[in-house]
Length: 303
Ligand SMILES: [Zn+2]
Image (cartoon, rainbow, N blue to C red; front, side, top):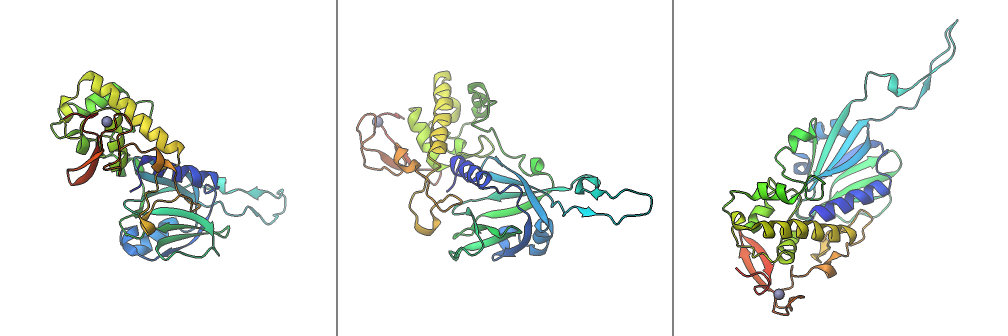
């Protein structure tokens, strides 16, 4: 499942490939639930608009859409007036809308030429006036593309952004304070920290030498500092490797150009059950915490 590094790598690649500026000429919805069920409303909110920016909040991709700049038209000459060119900026303020994309279990965005062969799991396709397409491929159908008028309100449930400057050990301590649940499900809670999932939580707890079942409110100040450092380290490493592709066949994460992320080799414990811990050599163990498969070294992360 794509987490912060995979989502941010997708955004960076789309930006680099020139997604901002593309004009949405038509939309194809193959699975209405992907767009919230109301296909006409979704199409009405995006067709004719251009992508002006792409950003991230937690695991959400946030696309800002504006009314597409129409071709500048030359007004017919009237007697006594000079010809002038009316720019779209003359209209009373560009109307903005936002599209939120959540990849969930198996979603990915591919930016390709329209004649590129399809894979068969395209739930939504945005056709651009340029001849390219943005395809939302999602074999397991849990992903969503939703249009909203106020992204801040729509995403107000999300917690701290772990790579922002505002994410400090003190903020982490405040976010965890008083939480009696185990640290693993607490870190998976998007309302506490936004963007972490099963992979990077296991990796961060290993790097911080914290057992996943320890109560969140039991962490010492040193534990908090170590966890803060570890969260940022594992996310930055994932980002520098363009995310993880873990080999689930058609559900495997891929970048918008179809390439896989390289971070699998960098993982220390995740899906390494039975293999030696890279620090002490003890076999990595797997247990279930809050219904999630969890990987740890019991020697480096004592209960
Ligand atoms: Zn170990």
